[in-house]
Amino acid sequence: MTLDKLIEIIVEVRETPELRDSISSDADIINDIGIDSLQLINLILKVEDEFDVEIDFDEFQMDELTSVERFFNYIKSIQEREFKQKDDALR
Image (cartoon, rainbow, N blue to C red; front, side):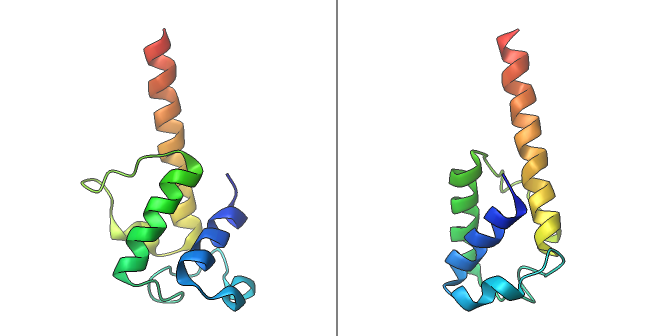
């Protein structure tokens, strides 16, 4: 999982290839990049598939989208938590 891969997914969902070079890690996914509500759902579904995570909509906070890097770190935290749960279950 890399920040570049997340940016690639955002560009794919946004359907604006020229956006790729202008997205920075501190770009706000909603306000700067312009992801709308339908695109947000598609983004989350693609992230779940690509990074093998499950985003719980009951605990998800829109604040996680205030920057690409913050969303990336949120995804990493889910991966780490899910890995630990699987590891604990195997013991």
